[in-house]
Length: 149
Image 1 (cartoon, helix red, strand yellow):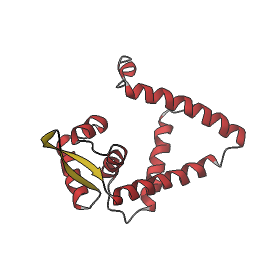
Image 2 (cartoon, rainbow, N blue to C red):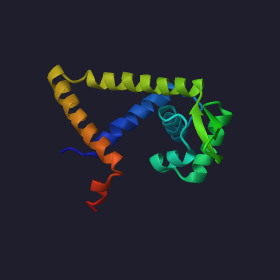
Image 3 (cartoon, rainbow, N blue to C red):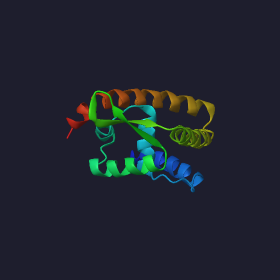
Image 4 (spheres, rainbow, N blue to C red):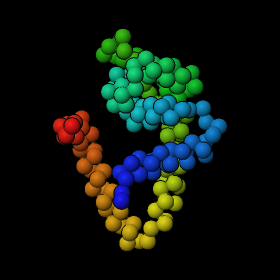
């Protein structure tokens, strides 16, 4: 019988693989997630990060202070609202994001190498379908899923 949590476990193992490869890195898992968001959305605000990640505002503020000190993120005054700051990735952040992406590529390629070509094709086709569904639902704030319970 299939346990749907195995999907989560695969992702967790990939993250564990990446963090084991980068033991000397100075970023926690949450800090890495924030860096990835800022790399993906340069110029974002802390409010946008909170909305997307659901990290507590005060925890995020502490994370941002650390990331600025460690030169992963730069704050710049928001030209539309002087009380707000936009966040931009540094070269160090871009490198860290690429390193994690490379680790994921190594891990998932290794994992897929255990499937024969036909199994891999079926899996990849199914994965693309599920990803499209999940992405669309995420864009709609998971409203269909929320309605289930």
